[in-house]
Structures are given as structure tokens and as C-alpha cells.
Length: 216
Image (cartoon, rainbow, N blue to C red; front, side):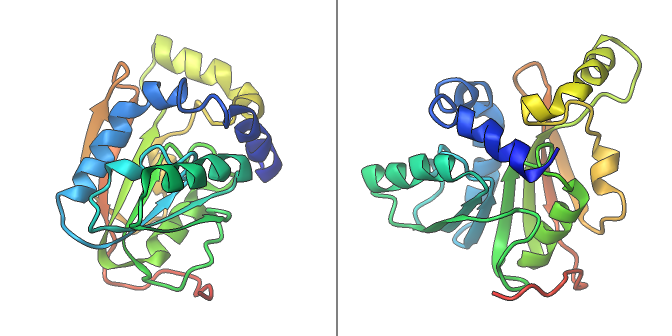
């Protein structure tokens, strides 16, 4: 996977994303936002906001910032914000998830839904999510993680792996690979439809600083 492959994939998906992927992936998205909404008013960063399909689900007392690598997806999201009058959305910015242009500890919550299997450097991106989250803050992740036990699912995932560039995501990506070297604490993990193929992780950033100190 590389940045240009990701841009090309989501340039193709922008017009059909809500009707196709939005419906398939709705359960994980709703579960993640529901977790965030239960905690009260805070500043939230949604990494990989895409077409903004989740934005109307957030509580209106939450201040939301969204970033995405795809300008085409962001155009759809910005139109949605205007059409639905989502005044709690502070901004929708074109930005690389692996190099977030925010100061350390800028957000109370960081959400990454269906993102970490598509970025070029998942571990580096996770470190960035941790960096911009305040100490003790929440990181909510929704993702597909590959099966580690022998069987049909693992065979299919490994068979699809060579086509990652065309698919726009990694079918053989494991949770252990993502968390390798990370100090993020996973507090809860639930599977969601379809077929339990996706997981919602509720994580917490520890008190120790871990970021690279990127400027605001």
C-alpha cells in the first residue's frame, strides 16, 4: 500500500461509498460513535472521515474535526455538513493520517474507523493517533483484523493479500501487528456485523508522552 494507491482507490469510491460501503460498514460505525457519545462533551478527531457519513451521529455538544487523504471524499463530506447544518463540525481537512498536523494532546478522543488497514504505515499512524490524543484520552478503532487460526477465512485473506493495492486495504492485517510496540491500552474489544468480520476497539492513551512533537 502507498499514498497514491489509496488516493486512487477512494477517488473511485467517493460517489458510491455511502450506498455500498456505508451500508455494509454501518454497524461498526454506529457502535464506535455510540461509545464516544456516552462519554459527554469533548473535542473529537475522526481520522479517515471519508464522505462524513458518521458526522450526523455525533452528539451536537461534541466538537468534531475530520481529516482524510481523499479530496473527493472530503468534497462529499463538506456538502453533507452544509446540507445537514452540522455546526459542531469545526473543520474537514485534507491530511495524511500518518503525519497529523496537530499539536500533541489536541483531542480528548480520536476515532479511526476502517482506516488502519488502508494506510501505508499502520504502526506509525497508530503512534500519531496516540500523540494527538490527550493523556488518559480515548482512541476508538474499527477495523478488520485477519484470522490467526487455520481455516477458510485465513486462506481467503491470504489469497487476497497480493491485491491490496487494487482493493485499497490489507485483507491479511492482524491486531498483533498493529499493536506491536504500542503503549496504547485496549480496554474493550467487540465484534460487529457483517459476520463478525470487524472489531471495535476501545483504547486509552497512557499518561506518558509518546509523540514526535509535530507542530499545530
